[in-house]
Every structure is written in structure tokens, then in C-alpha cells.
Image (cartoon, rainbow, N blue to C red; front, side, top):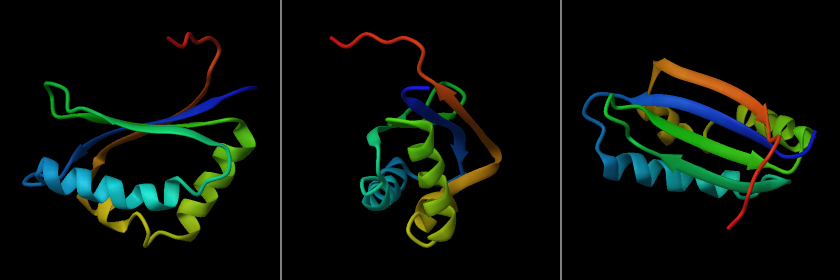
Length: 103
């Protein structure tokens, strides 16, 4: 398997402002950007129903798996971000990239 993308779909807690969300996301990037095999992270949204999509792309499945392990071992680093997430809305998928085009 080549590149792998982790896709998290979330709503943030009522009252969380976009400024707070983006600040917490930027703080989490401090950890994310140290992950081996990281290719890209993007936070997308919100859609008309208030959902955001957080994507993290890695060069391989082992890199993605190590990243998940590191996040769980160091929960304080992304604590501000996850504190804003409405966990009842949280969904997660890890998918392999099967085709792509770059412009």
C-alpha cells in the first residue's frame, strides 16, 4: 500500500469559535509535523451541517500507525484540539490512496 490518508469527520462543541478551532489545530500541528512519513494535514470546513473534515496523509501504512500510537501516548499535545471536539460526532477512517493527480 502506498500513501495512506486518515480522515476524521467532526463537529466542534457548541460555542467554539472558528478562531479557537484554528488556534487549537495549529497547536496540534506542532506534534503532527514531527511525525515520520507525514505528507500533509488539512482541516476542511465547516459544511452546511457544521461538520469539519481533518485529513492527515502519510507516505505509508506503518507511518500512519506510528503516528496514531504517538498521539495516544502524548495526549496533552493535542488536548486543546480534542477538547473542542464533540466526540459524539467523531468518525475516523484510514484509507489507502489508489489514484491521484497533482496539478
